[in-house]
Length: 157
Image (tube, rainbow, N blue to C red):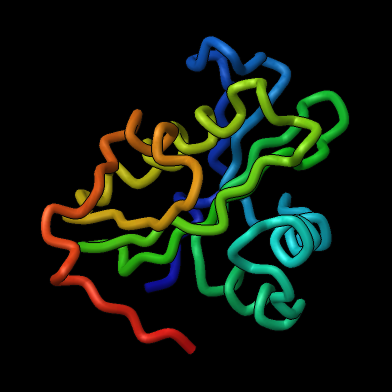
């Protein structure tokens, strides 16, 4: 379902997370995304999307809700997250990445906090994700291992 303009250009100061400074801004405005930088992060630095083509990246962005954390002083994008959802029952949180130089400042926590706040009004029954190394981060926001992982399956392509 297309997003309405009311869903776009949501910005928030990041003063709710103790480690994040107020010189940062959260936004879901797709026009602010630094697509080149995001592609480089994912295709070259992430463990899950190494080698992702630019075309696949652009198609994924176009079909998703996208979120960023930006440096208010210079506008540089410091973090990214993407959510795939039907907007009613289910969402998949993925491609969460914080720039290496921005890590350790609470930006990942602030990003997930704002993403979860943006999804809250949808009343989704389930939000899923996979992670190899950030379990503690996601547990802060109510994520936990599956009660019945044997019920989940994946078709890898």
